[in-house]
Amino acid sequence: MILVLGGTGEARKLASELTEREVRVVSSLAGRVARPRLPVGEVRVGGFGGVEGLAGWLRENDVRAVVDATHPFAERIGANAAKAAERTGIPLLRLARPGWEAGENDVWHWADNLADAAKKLPDLGKRVFLTSGRQGLPAFAHLDDLWFLIRCVDPPEPPLPRHHELLLARGPYEVDAERALLRGHGVDVLVTKDSGGDLTSAKLTAARELGVPVLLVRRPPRPVTETAETVPEAVEWVLNR
Ligand code: NAP
Image (cartoon, rainbow, N blue to C red; front, side, top):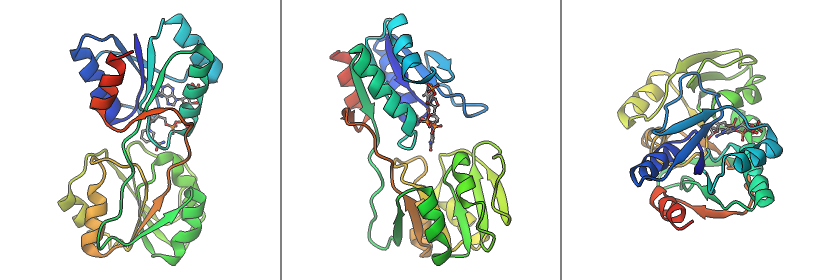
């Protein structure tokens, strides 16, 4: 059996491609989102209980190989997967879409992490479109002089910035709608993680068109493992295990 650590579009696509080729796949989700988009095939939900728990699960379930297709900012599970793979000797592939790259006319600024983004933000604008995800919001909660349009999938917990409007939505998003959103709210700076991929990149196009600067949070480091950038590469890797 192949374990796919999921929670991304790529993970769902991989589960579907492998199932089509009659490879048995179990997809694993953290259980953060109330109504997640489910991949085809078997799904398990919830943490494993750290490295020990994951290594035990891999052994008990006779896992042949693991694909870590989690989000680029899901740092802990990536580290746990690398350690558990090392402990059990089970092959591990990291499937990660490339980060976004600035094009002509993009006005991009980079932050090393969310705290750094919060520090840099007041110099860049006053009306912020914040798309850093629900778990990242507390880093901006103290910025009382700025106004935020906060977009996330599920309702966030406090602390939240004092002046904000909440928009609950899930991608993919279209450029026209993103442009209207930025214009309609008078947004003058966009904050995003460098998630990469097409599903949420429309906001970058809209920002470029409107001359709105973007503050991108750099990806956290991941352990060095075998890596694929695309689903077909990952399918190939699995079929060769
Ligand atoms: P994280 O900080 O790396 O993980 C925290 C803990 O959650 C892990 O130690 C693990 O618990 C559990 N976990 C995470 N991913 C799991 C998975 N796929 N299956 C089973 N357990 C998992 O992760 P996160 O940033 O909270 O993200 C959680 C999930 O949301 C990930 O699967 C990721 O792909 C998805 N996601 C994250 C983001 C983001 O920006 N962070 C964006 C979109 C989607 P145990 O130690 O108990 O095993």
